[in-house]
Image (cartoon, rainbow, N blue to C red; front, side):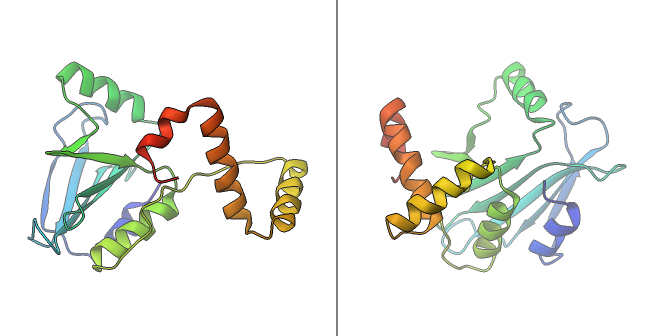
Length: 179
């Protein structure tokens, strides 16, 4: 999970708002900081971080791209269930970032950092979501050989294999993603 220090560096230490986090799911010493450039339309962005003021544990980070109507979020996996449960008890759709825009959940720290860096600097960025794969060495070597045989990068090969797997097992998922 991204650290408070990393987030502060991403936000260029520009804090526009801060408040006590009012939900109970992360504990009683929870605070949220926001860095917003003051624009809600084209060229607008904000990012926030929710963390424990005593332990500095980060519970979640978000970045909002108002130009492209995208919202990215990472929730610390240790606290995701507590967040989900509290959202249910409060009757809150935890997937909605704002009217008509749902959160895109990120699991890879590098993915969040890349997207946040680009959004905060007004640059284009890759909207695909990174995933981490843990492969045993035999499978990894097979992937390298197959990618080489097909004259493609390992990333291209894995992406192709995942799309084929989804087509075979859950084709309805491909209707919502760019394959």
